[in-house]
Image 1 (cartoon, rainbow, N blue to C red):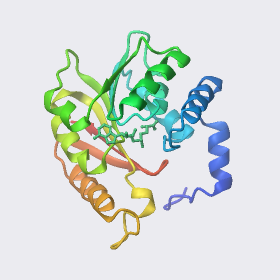
Image 2: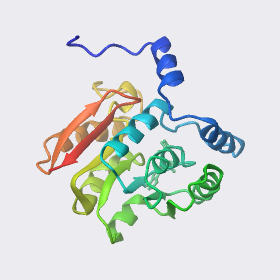
Image 3: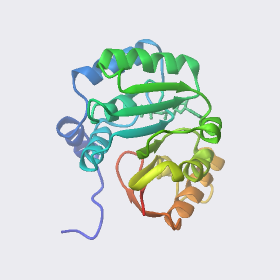
Length: 219
Ligand SMILES: C[S@@+](CC[C@H](N)C(=O)[O-])C[C@H]1O[C@@H](n2cnc3c(N)ncnc32)[C@H](O)[C@@H]1O
């Protein structure tokens, strides 16, 4: 046992990435297509994708919402962990990216499970309606919007469902008082972490995977 989290060295990261990853040939094709189209490589890691698949399977998730989807790497990974009649709604601001998500969903054979909505997440949550309860929400978009997403989406999440947000470590700068990296973004992540932790609707934890995955189970 250990009272401290073991630092994930590059070697351990390679081990995780080789052994415990969601990245198979299909996801390689998804990444290759994104690269050909010149998209930035800012998707979640393969082992984080596998961890999220694990959560979805453990909770028998059927309905997932993602805000901030880029080329669809995380969305497609999650869709692959859902049952055949499961559904994932991917909300992406950039129309070019939204088109690539659709292409990638085809490549991965999950287009029947994924609905891509090209919209600003903030606008989407103002007007959204679902005819089902959400099992899992993953936000990985504009960081200052995280608390808005949490507040607007909580009523749509089932009891026992999860709201998860990426980059809870703010690329390692979350504890810096004057971070070099976009101070406003870092500040908003720090504020979000604190407010989410004390939100009475959720039991919250932060998992040190990728850049930190903060998530809460709805009570
Ligand atoms: C870090 S990337 C998402 C990576 C993706 N989750 C993955 O792991 O494959 C962030 C994405 O959020 C999108 N985005 C930024 N602001 C947004 C907003 N207000 N609403 C919706 N999407 C937004 C960006 O266009 C970008 O594609």
